[in-house]
Image (cartoon, rainbow, N blue to C red; front, side, top):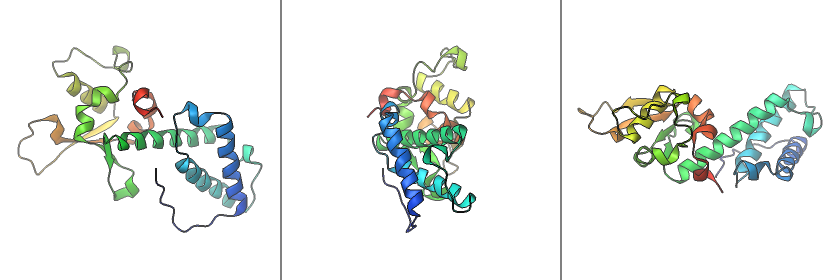
Length: 193
């Protein structure tokens, strides 16, 4: 995963704190447990967040294990896992992102729509979660409809087309809620190291 890092230099104290946190995560096997093979994004993301804390605290940082509250750190870990899953899905060409909005908008590709039954964990697709497998739709279309109903995806029609003939001609964009829930709905076998 390539991280575009503009020519920003960080104070040594910020870089050391980020390195210490990443080292703690490695030692606690957090990367392994969460199937993260490339820590590049986590180093970048942690450095950015620590720099913010450094500036908020008037150029002072507490010890690395007290920089963030538990909730803040959980949120950071969630964003790192989310970014890793998005990178895996992108590598497999199931999704793509646009260059607008800093590449933060992700769309299902035609391949992603065709393979949605492999992407979404079958254990998630149950009545408790509002999935009705008996709808008069194909299984693939039923999953796409469920993802839209759950507000994990937003469906848009290409207005240049006069008639929509197949579901692959609809553009499905991941919503912020969908991106945040990827770790719970994506088949874990698909994103393992």
